Image 1 (cartoon, rainbow, N blue to C red):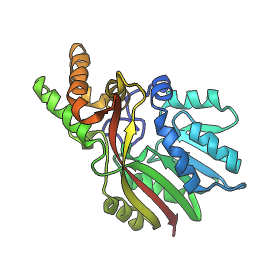
Image 2 (image 1 turned 180 degrees about the vertical axis):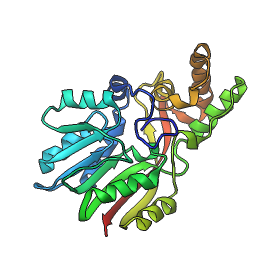
Image 3 (image 1 turned 30 degrees about the vertical axis):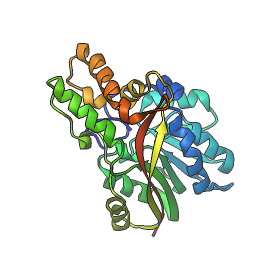
Image 4 (image 1 turned 60 degrees about the horizontal axis):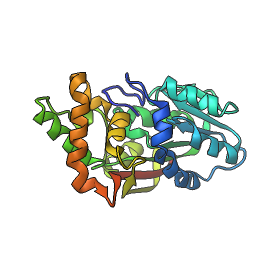
Length: 263
């Protein structure tokens, strides 16, 4: 979930749990429909992979009674434990987690585009599922936030900083890329689609600034602290013609949604 070349959804940066909860609740609001697709049943044992602050984990817990939430961010896990002490939350890496009791299903919302080593994460999911156990995933796909990324890079160049390649921070695969990885690693893909989902941001005044601070800090590693605020404001100003609509900011999200079963 965090920028960098690590294979984790935590990386070296610190997630801002308060900012995430206060201004980026759209992440778990959109995840509610994904829980309906998961359709948790009483008695099932389910993993929430990249649980963040735990709101969706709690919703799964209400339906099945047995859920574990993992995230590599200690700050996120601390917040989740404080909010939902009845749920088992653990710090763990998306590419290296192991449980003695396998899961009936693994759920993941808005996480796997942070995992650069996608194949290791897929293998790990496979190893931690019961036979014919299912995965229900949604994450950024090919072209996700391309308008924002392009403007970040152009503005960095204008301020005499080298642009950052998107793959240094995120992995936005095509459907064929990701489903091939799943099939090559022991999954039968039951559903796979990609769709545009322009996503309204929380603050009309500072929507892009908040988004950059929460999700795109990796682009500003090596940028002088005195320049960061001006660069971010310039990016927001330049994005107004395309992403500010009727006084509301929207991020140009493209999502992949997948359901698959372990062979």
